[in-house]
Image (cartoon, rainbow, N blue to C red; front, side):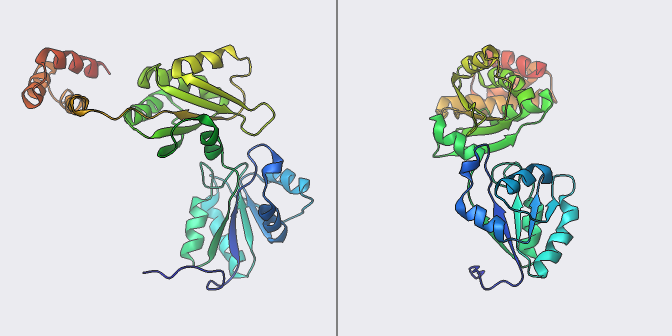
Length: 290
C-alpha cells in the first residue's frame, strides 16, 4: 500500500495547480496570491492573458506557455526546473487547470517523476454553475465540450440520454444555439435545463426551464449568443421494469437492423421480449432511418 504523501518526503520543487478567477478577480484566494508570489515559474495556458492577472497582482514572474498543442514538449522543461528545486505554478486562462483545460499530461508526468503536486483550490465554472442551478447535485456527470460537428454532438447526446445523473457541459457562444437545438431533438423539449452564461462576470445570466423554453429565451435575448456557457441538464428519470424492457429491445433492435432486414429483426426481438411485433417493426424502421 503506497505511503501517504507529505510536504517533506519528496525532493525538489513543488508543482502547484492554482485555480484562477473565471471572471471576477476578487475570487482569487489569498493562498493563490501567496503561491503565485513565491513560485519561480508560472506555466500558463496563455501567457498574455495570465500576464495581465500577474500585473493586476503587482507580480513579475518568468512565464512558460503551456497549452494543448505543446504540453508534451513542455514536460522536460518543467521537470528540469523542479529537479533544480524551483517551485512552479500551473494556471489556465480561467478556473481550475485540467478541468477542460491543459495540464493532465504535465501533472501525470510530474507525479511519476517523484515530485510533489499540490492543489490550490478555487473557482471552477462547473461547480459555480451547479451551485446556483437548482438541479440535483448528489450525482452529476461532467462531460466538458461536446464534439463541434452536429453528427458527433448528436451521437454523444444519444449516449447520454438515459443517464440519470445531472449532465454538465461547457459550450462556446457560437455553438450554444446548435447545442440547444440538438438537445431538444435528442432529449426532448420538456427536459429540465439550466444555462449559466458569463458566470461571476458583470453580465452573469441564468436561463432555466424546459430545454425548449431555454432555447427560446436564448433566441429572444440579443446577448444570448455571447460569453461562455455552462449547460446543465436534469438526468433522465429512473426506468421502471417495463421501461427497462423497452430500452433493451431498442438496443437489440439497433444492433440487428444493421445486419438483418427490418422485418426479421423485429420478429427476433418480439420472440425474445414478448413485445408487439408490429410495434417493434415501426421502431426498427425508425432506427434504420437514423
